[in-house]
Length: 303
Image (cartoon, rainbow, N blue to C red; front, side, top):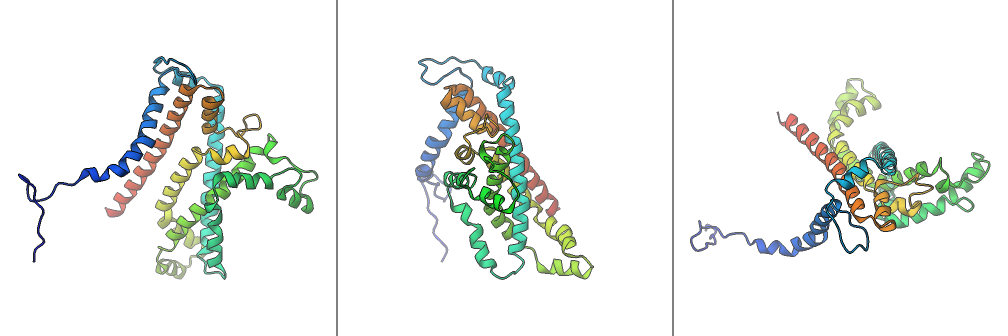
């Protein structure tokens, strides 16, 4: 028997969707995300400071200040170094680890579980763990390097001007490695084995198969993971704050840390809002470029 259609008076035979059923999910999004975002945009065009009774509209004053703020550009440069280094490290090491986990080696089932452990640890706990490992006198890293004869005296990794940023980058790579590895491993397992066998019959070795078969087929996934890692890393706060709080002397002060200090250390709420808008614009541009690239790739594959 044909399914009966719900009707409404004066309608076309189909019941109108009950949009009010979406309200329980829309209300938290509006209250916790959209309204704070709109308030931040509004404050970015004012001179509001923490505790001030009044605020005045100054239009692009905060953005003009940002362009001439040397500390902002320094934090932006540090953030760019951090973001690119962590993203490239995560993608390269994640690909290598995914290839190993897909090679059919003994114990790879256990290894896949162990890879996920850093993913399950909160960022603050990760920072505390690595602070203990980097401790100059009782840290695990110095103990191993001293025992191996690599260094002659303990290194204060997180308070050394030369080593603070590289040390934080290592932690960032370790933190982002599980997500990238899982996604890349899933992409590897979708590649038909017949393609690799055909490449092997044509004389391609392991590197040739990876370069001409595996990597081209995985490139859309690699680009997507790279874009996500870029956005997450550029927007990073908790991990670096737990490790160094932006020190020593600002050598690890990422843009989000700089905005945080302007807002809650110096009370420049309006200027911090403008900094947040700049970060959102940068992340939005990266997301737009990523989506456009994937769309073009999909169109070319269908053509």
